[in-house]
Structure formats: C-alpha cells, structure tokens
Length: 404
Ligand SMILES: Cc1cc2nc3c(=O)[nH]c(=O)nc-3n(C[C@H](O)[C@H](O)[C@H](O)COP(=O)(O)OP(=O)(O)OC[C@H]3O[C@@H](n4cnc5c(N)ncnc54)[C@H](O)[C@@H]3O)c2cc1C
Image (cartoon, rainbow, N blue to C red; front, top):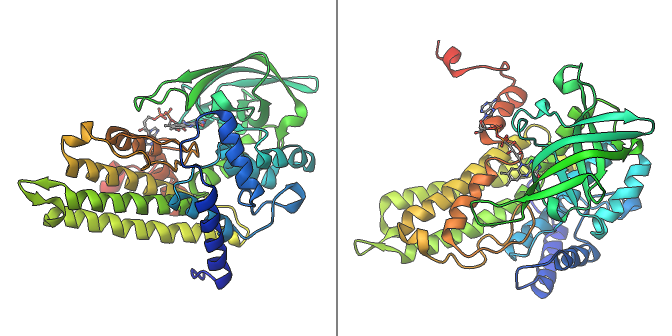
C-alpha cells in the first residue's frame, strides 16, 4: 500500500480546487430543481461516478481521483449531490450484481441526475435486525406485487426510484427469503409520509407504504431470494464509501473548535489554555489522523478492485463516534452559550447525505452527529460486525462469558 499522492494526483487536486472555487454554490440549495442542476454540473465537469465504466457514462478513473473530488468538495463546503443513494449505493451495487440491461437502463440516468434514488431497507420492526423484514412481494406472472411498510427512508420525498428489500419466501430461514428489487417511486399504491426530526428538519426522510404495488420481474437484482448477500455489498459502500470527504469535513470542524477554544473564556481564562481542554483537543486531532489512514486503507483495497467489505465498519464506527465527541467538546467549551448561540451557517454544509443543507445553530450541530451513529447500522451493530466478520470472534460472544 503506497499512501503518497502522485504528481498527477496533486495536479488533479489543484484543478478540482480551482473549479470548485469558481462554481460551487455560495448559498444552500433550496429546491429539487436547484439540487439536480448542481448534480448535473458536477457530472458535466467529470466529477461524479468517475470510476464507473465508460460504457455507462463513467470515466474509469482511479478511485483515488474520486476520493480527491469528495475531499475537495468537503473543503470547499460545496453541497453534495442530491443523488447520494444513486451514486454511492445503487451504482456500485448494479456494477457488481446487475445485468447489462439494468446497468444500461439505470447507471447513466443516475449520473445525469435524471432519476434520484432512495434506499428502502429499514422497517418499524427491522432496523438492526434487518433480516427480520416483513415487507413482502408475491410473484404474479412476470410481476411482483409489493405490500408492506418501510421507515427512515432518506430522500424518499424527492426520490424517483428506490432499491427495496422484500420478503419473497416466508418459509425459508430469514436471511434466505429476501429479494432485492428496483422500484419506481412515482406510481400508484406508494404513499410517502415525511417525518419531522428533533433537529427541525421536516423532509429529510419518510415512512413509505406499499399497497399492491406492481414491479416488473426484470427489476429483480440478482437471483430470487439472494437479496441479503446483495444488500451487504450496498451496505459496505454505504459505510466505507467516501470517508475521505468525512476526514476533510472533520478537519474543518476541528479548526472551528480550535477557534472557539481560543476565544471562549471561563473565569477569565481562555479555554485553550486549560490543560484538560488541550488534552481533549489533542486526542481529537490524533483521531482524525487515524481515521485518515483507515480511510486510505479502504481506498487502497478499492483501487485493487475489491469492494470495501466488512472493514468499512471500522471507519463508520470511528467517524460517527468521533463526530459526536468533537461536537460534544465544542458544547463543553461553549457551556450554556451552546444552547442559544449561532454556529455560523456553514459548519455542516457538506453532509454525508449530500443534501448540502446549511444549518445555523449549535444545538443542531450537537444533535446531528447522533444520527450518524444510527444510520447504515448503529455503533453497536458495527462493533458486532467488526468482532465477528473482521476479527473472526465467535458469533454472539457476550461480555459475561468473556469475563469468566
Ligand atoms: C439519519 C438517518 C437516516 C437513515 N436513512 C435510512 C435510509 O435511507 N434507508 C433505510 O432503510 N434506513 C435508514 N435509516 C434507518 C437506520 O438504518 C436504522 O435506524 C438503524 O439500522 C437502527 O435500526 P432501528 O432504528 O430500528 O433501531 P433498533 O434496531 O431498534 O436498535 C435500538 C437500539 O438497540 C441496539 N441494538 C439492536 N440490536 C443490537 C444487537 N444485536 N447488539 C447490540 N445492540 C443492539 C441498537 O444499537 C440501538 O441502540 C436511517 C436512520 C437515520 C438515523
């Protein structure tokens, strides 16, 4: 593994930086049309789906180039793409498991931003235990008929298409009776009900209800009842796909933290001069570096043609918990002021969900990282995966048994 950037990479980075300085929107994007226009602009500049096959609109660029773009976007506080699910989840899944017809039909539209996607996995009784999902699809001739409910579906209010996990065999063991479908979200029988969050955001995600929704059999990805394995590919990209961008965002948040520690006083003393605060700051800075190297390790695996795999859980666990600690420390330093003060409008301009939402209060910045420790599998679930699938510990090893 060579972690150095080549001269070519450095020149590419400089070009991306210049482009963003000229083109990145200065204001948060409001409407779906504005978000789609920004996506299209990024694609036309050659900055989306860079590693995808040329036949489907990609450039077959090296993964490091895509990582550089994501990093530079975070640095420039440019909004991400509205089509984060299409680019980050659906595209890689279709490249690994789709048919040529499916790739032909969907990949280019994802890149053009003509179809925005969402991920319909979680249900009210199937989150961490995703394989317990009950939303079902019956086969009727050359169609599936879908009935049931999903929840916490990000971007659902804006989505044109979705990837949907359904139960197609109720007799089989739970992991073996699941299939992976592509569903058109703009059809009768689908009801999307947006969910309001404690952060005040009204339409980031939704509940979705399906009543006798017809899905063509051609929309099945992989074989019938093999959806669980395919879902793992999608999840490995979701957990470890673009963490270099997260490292860049954390670096910016850390700069802000330093600024606040340097200007906030307690008992007349600058917080940054307090040895305890300095120790906590040092630890966070060191952890950002650790995250950089574990992200580079995933990148190096992807450069060699592998998909991120269960190791991506290490980065997911690390970045989400680190974000929580970073903003927790910011609140510790700010004290009660953190409840009321203005955090500036651009701290969180680059969100993992690519909405480019700008928020202007500290309370938001404290709460938002908690969502990161839940989506794409909670921290406890990432620890289970690391234990069982990365370290090879026995399944279901419990602390009380370890203690003996
Ligand atoms: C911002 C955000 C966006 C999301 N976007 C999407 C999306 O686009 N599509 C989608 O399908 N879903 C999405 N989700 C849902 C997310 O995947 C689930 O919330 C998550 O998997 C947890 O499931 P749950 O909410 O049902 O909690 P539960 O599974 O009920 O978990 C409750 C608690 O129990 C713990 N727990 C559960 N099982 C175990 C275990 N075996 N060992 C140890 N601890 C355990 C959990 O860690 C958690 O603390 C999103 C969630 C958030 C917060």
